[in-house]
Image (tube, rainbow, N blue to C red; front, top):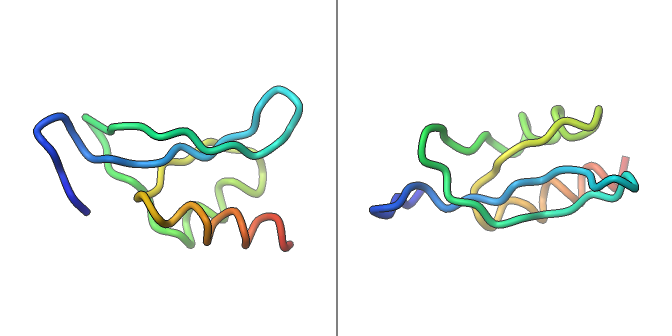
Length: 66
């Protein structure tokens, strides 16, 4: 996990108003991204999660494949 002077670069995974999974780049200032396994369990029921950059593909593949 790389931290810059502005925070930790991360990707937000959430659902848009139509229910489609989307990813949005973010910089976390007060929290840390969660691991892939925890993110998968949170995204399945529709919760928003923040993961490290590069981990979003694994989460999306796992959620879409189930």
